Length: 74
Image (cartoon, rainbow, N blue to C red; front, side):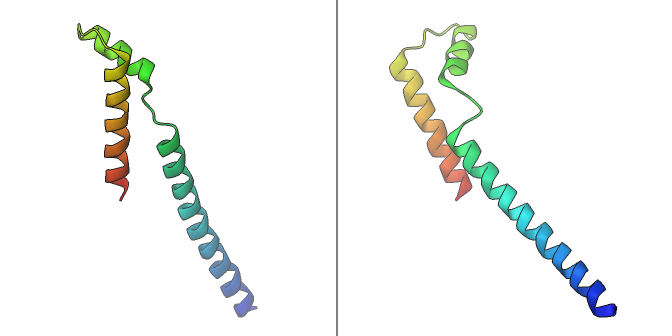
């Protein structure tokens, strides 16, 4: 009886650890592939600040943001 309870608790702890790290890895990959800020959002922000955004500048800003996110994740 004591061994059964020990195995159940051990299995629960292992499952929680695997679930936590698996979910964390999934979210990191999701946010890397689908950043929370899009080019359209950047365009809107720049227009609100009084700047006229070109597509080249928007693309450059997105690449910079992605590079910083990759650098932060390492």
